[in-house]
Length: 513
Image (cartoon, rainbow, N blue to C red; front, side, top):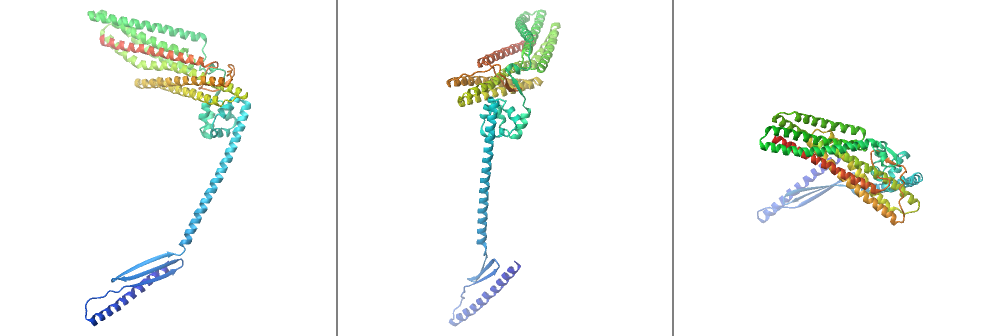
């Protein structure tokens, strides 16, 4: 490069000398001409010089031109191998493209090989499962190929555990990658059951259940009596106050507060009796809820005793204020306790639905062995499973909300949590109704195919613990239980409404006493 630069400088220097000489000669000639003909002025001359210098693969061309007395210089540098290099670049790009295409083709072939291997493994797995348990094979066969491929790569124990779950759960878990799926399956617990009773959180004796129901009826009677006495006492209080009889007004005000307290206590005792009766609430949870209810009852009982012993209007006003505040704090908690009972009933119906789904698969597997085409029925069973899973998820969310409400001391937070739980329970019951509709479609479709479903009531099925199920005998029984749940839920809500009347009475007595 240094040699090239030196030659370039030298060339420019040499070229710059020639035009000057030519210009001077032209000037002299012009001057002679002018003098010879006696005219004045000057004549401008044009000239151009080009020089080429080559250094290896580099070619330098310099042009200098004098035009109208002005020197113009242009320089051009060329790479003689530029065309060759461009061709090399194009060839390299073409080679790289060919390599990429070849790599993609090899990758596609590998994927196809893996897919075919998975398909073989999947089919082999289905055949083995069908030999051991046709019910499980039907759940696996219902999956999409990609999901089934992942399952085919699991070990035998993991596959058996996964296929023992409901269809919707199998579908849900199969979406995970292999590592996450294996980890989740280690946490899953499966239990063999004959019916939904085997999934109860506790088993109560008939004597214990009858006793709880008796306590509920007695609490209901006390509640209604207290409400009636409260209304009568309030009316007498207003009459005494209007008559100006302060002594009578004081006694009537005490009766108002005492009966208001009795109404609150009776309402809480009704809820406590329902907790004691439920077999879908564990002993531990039932004991904890009962303890909280007893604490609320003791607080109201203390205010009742203060009211009975009051001797002045100021005492009555103070007690009425305290009772009103106590009920405001207790009312939302009482709703949380009552909704927990409803949640337990919904859980029982979901358990029945899960058991029924498994027994349906077993019955359909038998029909399939007889050569029946059950493709249409399978899709309906999948929809049935999805609705049951939705109901389970909703009731579980509701239960979590109620647990949070029981633990909170913030009245507004408790109210919001209870309202959310109530809405979730409504959605859960609606999903169960839709599941029941799907069940009727399944029975109808099987009959249209000229077959009958034979549900074995005494057969065992595998159920994921703390989840799923439905009645072994008929869907009508599940529907009746569901309606009973709604009726009892309404009954609990009517109890809450009565308690709200108590609150209004307490507020009125506070103002009027």
